[in-house]
Length: 358
Image: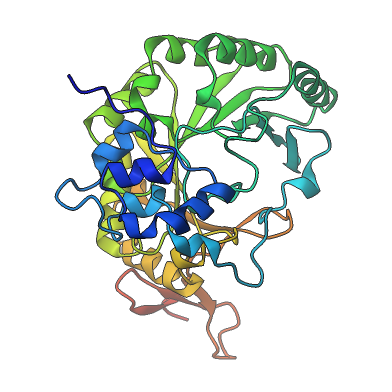
């Protein structure tokens, strides 16, 4: 009787499963020595079984390490979005006035090859905040009445047990000015069984509204098991939004993005952010250009329902926050006789004047 597959964490295990060639094992050992590797059995099942070692498979590209990760270029940095610059106490990032990131854990069910926190997460790092650090983080939130929303991140907060998650939720909901608790996670698509009835119950708490942001980048990740996990959350009254990263070879074409955004909406998940790839070390091979991203966003406008439209955003390096970088559709008419007239581009690319008649 075959043993059930465990999470794959070593390059030799990837070779044994046929996900990479034995010829690249020495290079992948170097990659794994620097960046964490983990593929759950569920993620492995999403990789095309007809050619599991295909380096262009959109699931494999996200999770299977490659030697390209050892190549860095100028401008890439260990903390590309500047978490450290906006961290007043350990575990907290306070970048915007009314919300904070609360980094509870430093482990994930899977490790994305483009992760902007890849230098901070994985084995060898502290798996969770100590009791003392956790208490100081809560004290910071209590002391800042402007904090309306707490965003649980990491790592992946759903790596906590349901019991511990319930404790965290109750601690935060007990703070009078915290009204929204948002959870950023990959677990519903990476390990759907982990979204158990016990976990769903732990996420619901009196005194604050729970929201969940799901990270997925390809429609294939939203299979029946993942859709079931999302349904358990939404049916329990937990609204969901999506976060995706624009990735070369994964979703950098109109058909792939269209399928992904429609899959989200079919799961009752509102598309929220499409992130431009961050300048994390060793991720150049997965980043697109901003111009390519803008053209893709133009292609979605009109061909997809408004429900399916995410915001294309860039996290400005250095800790300065997100800014929308989608294409523009409005400009001033250059006719000096029409000072308050605008040129507007429709979804077909045609230009119209507004007001139409002066």
